[in-house]
Length: 354
Image (cartoon, rainbow, N blue to C red; front, side, top):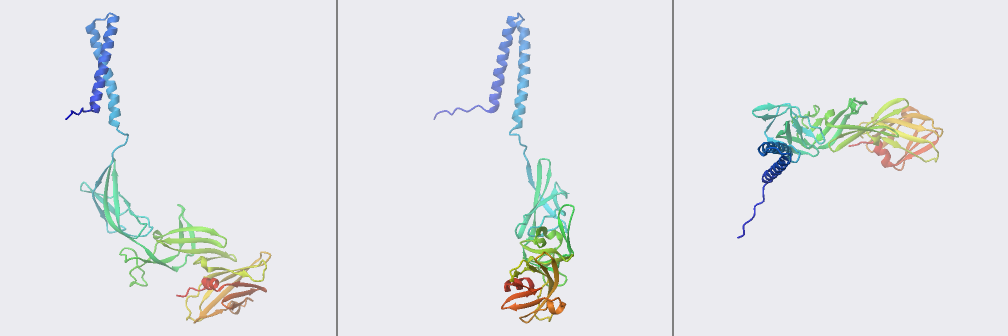
C-alpha cells in the first residue's frame, strides 16, 4: 500500500516561512558585511538581530491576522430556566403585542428580571414564549408556556363618542365598550360582569386591539381590529353636529328616480333590532342636497311590528317627507323629487334583527 504524503499544517508553513526569511536576511547581512569590511562575527550578531526583529514583526502581523479568523465573534447561547410572576401576562389574543414584564430567568442561581420576551401571536394555540437575556457574547434563554386565543365574534356594547390621536400617533376610541367571544376560556382576561356564566366572553381593553382611520367621502371611518375580527365606526358631521355610526353599512345612498341632480343619503344612528317592542325602532337623519348644492337635514324614524314595516318620519316629525314601500323597495319623496332604494339596501342599513 503506497504511503500517503501528509500535507504540512498551517503552522508548519508559518515556521518554514520564518526559517526561510531568517536565512535570507542572514545571508544578505553577511554579504553586505563583507563588502563594507565589517568583522564577520559582529555582522553576524547584527544580522541575527535584524532577522529576529523582522521575524517578530512579521509574526506579530500574521498572528493578528490568524487570530482574527473570519472577523466574526462567536455568540454562545445557554439554556436556563424561565419563570413567570403571578402578574405576568400568560394569555393573549391573536395579534396582541407581548408584554415582557413579570418574566425572569435563573442564571447562575440568581434571578435575572430584565429580560426580553418573544411570542408568536399570529395564530391561536398554546405557544412557547422565549424569554432571553444577553450578557456580552452570551445569550441566556428559557421557555414558558402561554396561551393565544382566537376571536369568534365582536359585540359593540357602546359605540365610541369620539376618537383622539396620542403623541405616538396611535388612535384611542373614547368611551367605547366592546366584548369579544374567544376560542377558549381565559383565566386572566376580564369576563363580562353582566354574564358571568359566559366563560369565553371578555371585555376588551385598548391593548387588546388595534385602531386605524381612513378619510371617506361621507366622513371619517375608524376601524377596530381584534384577532381576525373587526368593526368600523363612521364619524360624520350633519347640520353642524357630530355623530357616530356603528358601521359603514348604516349609510344608505338613494337613487334619484326623477333624473335630476338632487341627492339623498340616509344616516342610521340606531337600527331596528327587535320586531316585538312596539314602535321603538330605528332613527337617523336624511341629508337632502338640491340641484344648487344646498343641504337640508330631515329626521328619520322607522319600526317593524312582526314582519310589517312602518316608515313614520313624516308622521312623527311633520317634516313633509313621504315614505312608502313599492313592492319590496323603499320610495322617498322630498320636495317633489322621488328617490328609491332596493330592498337589500334599505334593510341592510336599517335592520339588525337577530
